[in-house]
Image 1: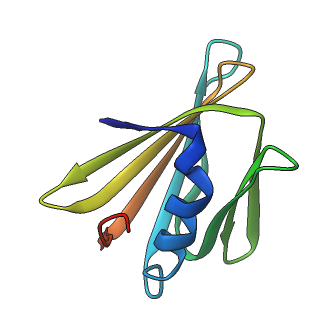
Image 2 (image 1 turned 90 degrees about the vertical axis):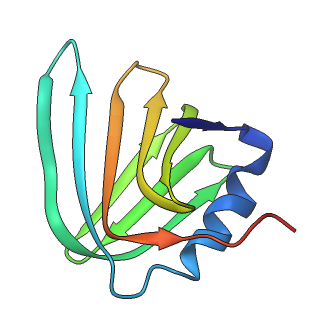
Length: 110
């Protein structure tokens, strides 16, 4: 897992948004308080964006808007240059695990 610096989140997710067409997402949430829960299973992914003013990471899938408020850390699992999953830890220590099907190929930072 590669940690993504908070200063890069907006640009990182903006770049990712351009490559999401045709992808599906599974969202799992893990925390001591709730154990492990599946929020979404392989829904068509519509977009992911980070809004710095609201300190909010929004994951939009068909029929679901998954909002992660006050994220503290974002990690990307990359295989052969492709993002296969993201892990987002919020300020309540909930881990939001975003698994992507048909892994994304992200362009290098400019």
